[in-house]
Image (tube, rainbow, N blue to C red; front, side, top):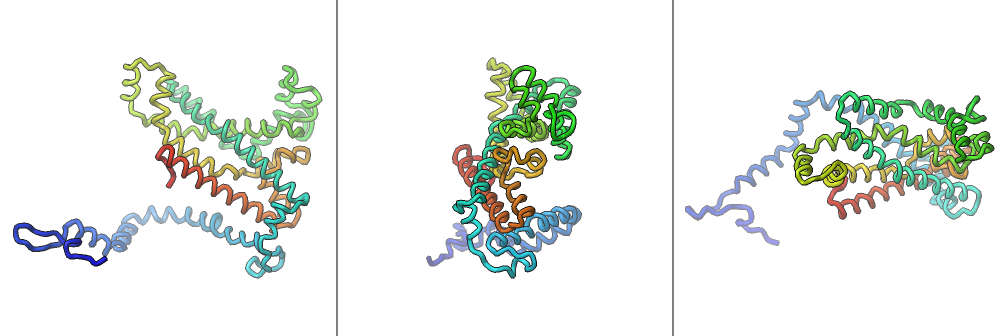
Length: 350
């Protein structure tokens, strides 16, 4: 379309002449000197940008450079040649994993199923617990008591995975860390929830109990720490909202339902989207420290599958392809969850 002067200029009725729109002049000046303003901002706040350098380096070396190794999913594994010089293998590794029909394919689908189930149970039972804890902290009127409760629930998060899994192992086993009946096993046996034979054999040696132990220990470890975000959102609610609810006759439960939860809904949605994004990214360290050959059927996940075949089985191409498929599915879950959240609640990550 052909532009006209009236599209860019403003008519002065008194003189009948055209002149530039003052707002457009400002916009043009900003666009013209954009990089000059950016440079001045960097020079002015150079200390903040210097502090940002370590974070950028961490992302560069531990997030972006490792992406180069994803080429191993499409190359013939060779211990001598670098990835760029290896022969192209196409999608053969993916075909082996998906429709190979061998024991390798069976192990992969078992690991994928276990990964999804462990993550899904964690989402169903682990995600609401920080919200419940935050609501509980908000109802504690004594600042000293609330601080004590918060510290006690935060502490497990600051223990290393090795220490945490060792504690779990000692609770369900006694004597050595590989055999015997622990305090928790003995208690469950005494009240009749499990048989004595199962307790003596060790709950971590029984595949039927691995998922429950994994989820309960995960809630114990991270529920308190994850409640910080929700508690911060709750304390930001205006006291006038509670006063208005009290005038209308709302009790504590009604205030939680009609005041607190709607006020922190955006925070809940954002945290839920990020949680769904990491749905299939189970940290293999905890599973690796808790599982054994007896519990592969319910404990083996994609990360441990890749670790076992990539490092111990020398099948790096298979391991790389398995992890790549896992990450692609996770990315699609983020996109889907974000789209649904944006359409349903008008709250989204992007």
